[in-house]
Length: 228
Image (tube, rainbow, N blue to C red):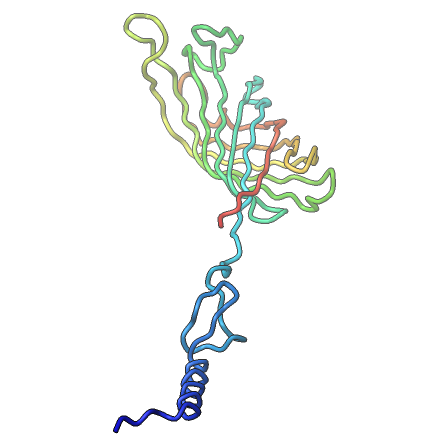
């Protein structure tokens, strides 16, 4: 004879199996099942993520003048880098002093005895701005790098320049001044200080004559970039 299972016994067995399975599986609010977790401790892998990482960068441009061996030389400069904290920034800088007249620009300069002469400075800068949250606050800047002194050579066809000749020397400077928070992202700075150039006798310029006092007015823009 065929023996049919007791309906009550079968229902009881199924309830036990599903209760045991519930200890190992859970369903999170998004409908995903996770093994070996309970509903109260299930981790939502869809919504979990690391907090975003952000950096503050800056770019600056400006100009002024340097005072060398009794002459005033125009100065153009730019820089960029990272604002590590509200009061300190580290980056790279670039600056140029024309030392004589150029083919299409009569600057009234004769600091060097060669036409199209220049001094190009580059390196690392450190900017310190205590009390940066105030509208007007102190500004300290130090640089270290090199200075290239040279001139541009005319092209063979006589139109424009196609090469240059230069020598590289040590360069460093330190200056102080004030910076104004023009807006949340724009700062205007005025500074003056001393620079040291380790040049030897070149292009009619005596040794060390590229050292001297300099003054500059600059605009600095800051912005934050989030990396998620």
